[in-house]
Amino acid sequence: MILKNKIPYFNLALVSFLFVLAFILKTVEAQENQGSEEDFTNAENAEEKRIKWGTDEFKLELIKEMSSANIALFIDEHLKTINEPSRIYYKFTKESTREDSFRGNVVLNIVKIDDDKTKHITFRYLKGRNKVRFPPQIGAKGNPVFMLFFERDARDMQRLTGGNALFFRSRIRHSIAATDVEDIQFKFNGENYPGKQISFQPFLKTELKNRVSRYKTKKFIVTISENIPGYIYKIETFIKDLDDPDDVVKESLIFQGIRTNKQLRDAYKNRKENS
Image 1 (spheres, rainbow, N blue to C red):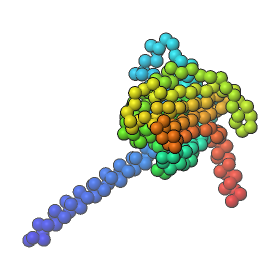
Image 2: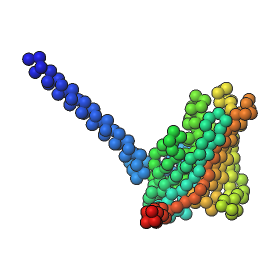
Image 3: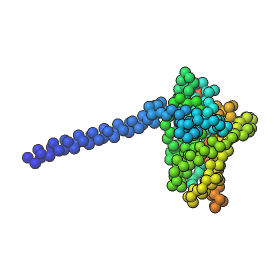
Image 4: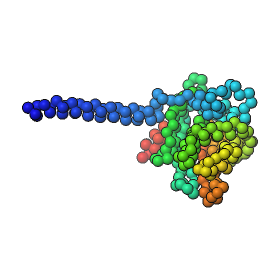
């Protein structure tokens, strides 16, 4: 009699366990699908994102005088010369006296181009413990890689200081809005390129608490050129603690090249045939 009474409870527990297991598996599957390079279900609108980064509260149309840096980063159409699905490659380097230094790759994957020339984009931003996940974007005209760099940087400063990423992000935006570009020449693959450089120090005139004081003189340098696919050639940051000269951090993101999806498929086919 006791055994008979326990059987229904055992079955109920089994059913509950299977239900929970199925739910977990379904959740994991959904998360994996969200990470797919071809899944744009939760994509952000790229131009809306760019306007939000470049100005406060989407009020771009109310600004009568914009800095040339704001126009170069948030208005110019960096991707206009890319006419077929392609991948843009960047090399990321961090040199730090406080944490482990590392190198990694950043890939901007232009998956689809719409009739109005706007792009569907996914990202691979570093790997392993340094990996940063960013949602895909649709309707892109500008190259979002500089915003990803700033976003990761703001999160990193939050992690290291206990400060607020919103504060760091806001200071970066306001500094860009008050900065103008400088005409320069730079070398890439042994050739001279005309370009523009944007340099700013977001925290130089900001009252900072002790934990953030090491960023007082932190400098950002963005180098762009219309002759580089995606416009963004290099982004650099440099920190040297005023109280501890041995505390130095350098980070850079440098353009490596671009390959169309057709070129990638052909290269893969050749490797497979020759292996």
